[in-house]
Length: 147
Image (tube, rainbow, N blue to C red; front, side, top):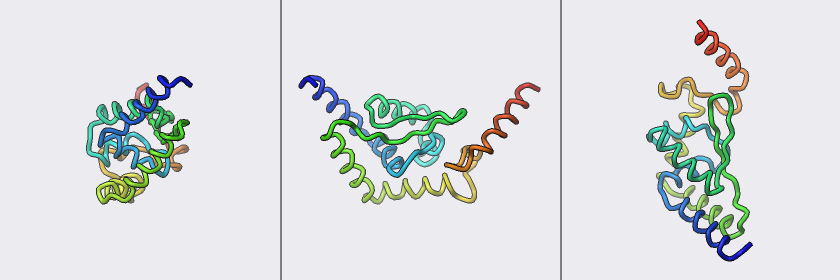
């Protein structure tokens, strides 16, 4: 890899980390995949803003997206660059210790797995438990649309 490409990749990586919303998103994904609907609820930001930041992280190679029906799920991907990999690990560890990041993570737990789901995401899938319900929901939605 040429020196120019190496530096360009590092610049893109550090620019991706240079935003508080993107850091908050990475913090929420630190232990696994998260549906975009939960990001909007936990961070209190609009879906377009969240999507722009997730696209930035995806273009920087820090997250991957997976579509499940109409839902997009995101997870962190370790960079191939060893320097970036170490910096990302340290950043996530540091974020985990911050009170405001812990609060975001607790709110994710409430929004995602709570008994009563906030109205704004009441039709959102629960992680790992929505596959069968999602199929019947899609069928119901299709039937309603076709009526």
